[in-house]
Length: 393
Ligand code: ADP
Ligand code: MG
Image (cartoon, rainbow, N blue to C red; front, top):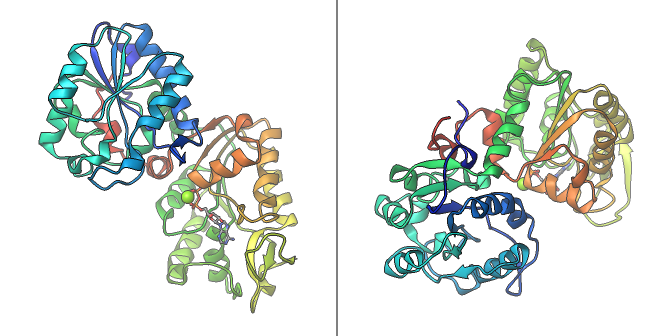
């Protein structure tokens, strides 16, 4: 069921609580990367243009229910004010009489930023009383924090029990874009999965095996599958207790319409050090101290031919240890093939997005999700609690 968004309701003169994801990296008290703040600007600007009084709230870091001075929201207020070109009034509280007073003094078009939500224990425990207090000064709750939508916290779920709740523009776009590959995808649909661990992503693997025409696997993710086929894999990273799971996924794939495509060759090295000597091996030959660190050139070629003939591509997880060049080559070559192809691409996963950013390729991808765990759970087919509580259209 599609969810209501701010575009579906009147916000003029209303006190709107906008739950945003301003969980940005900080460096010496300043925002180091403002990507997440910029992602919420369309929602903020829309609400201001429609005459709302805007109360903003987010978590920042992991203060675990107590006040931590380095995790106050002041750097976010500064950056936000810079980006919007207007004042952002930051308050040192989250709930209580001072917040109520500050809100009562607001005019339409004003912005008030609350203190870090996770300074309060009740946030992560979804405490009813804290959620009620959060809702006290507001008429409407808008959730734009897709990256936190898989968590049932007071500011993502609890508050919606007290006031009408709708999606912001970013949340709406995330739902729409991530659904594309789940409902009526353009075909052929190619799923690409990489990253470190299979255990994080078993349900996503299974879901994509149901949905996609082919599932290309690389990175550490491929290792247990290659091991399950009888390869020793030398010193490669993989979860040894997942061999059974890998075997059953292989046999499920044989019965499914989806082809499971594993690497034919791998770049191997003896240490994860920049420019450490490396060579290309077939999985059968990897033994001793050698560890797989990237997909090899034959694999890049094979993956590329699938990409070239795809109409839609979904991708999560890097295909090698991209943090340690040149083991970023596989990820970078596949990203370039995707950009070159006519396929519509949707990418999710914190590390992969960071990799594409550092390669300067993020701008050319069809859609980049701002969620990590939330994106994976969405793709698994789970109903995320922070989305569930929003009103249906
Ligand atoms: P994402 O955040 O995109 O979902 P993950 O968190 O699952 O991705 O995995 C990212 C990590 O996987 C990176 O730190 C990367 O170095 C690691 N990785 C990729 N390939 C390998 C490999 N062959 N061996 C060990 N680690 C790998
Ligand atoms: Mg990650």
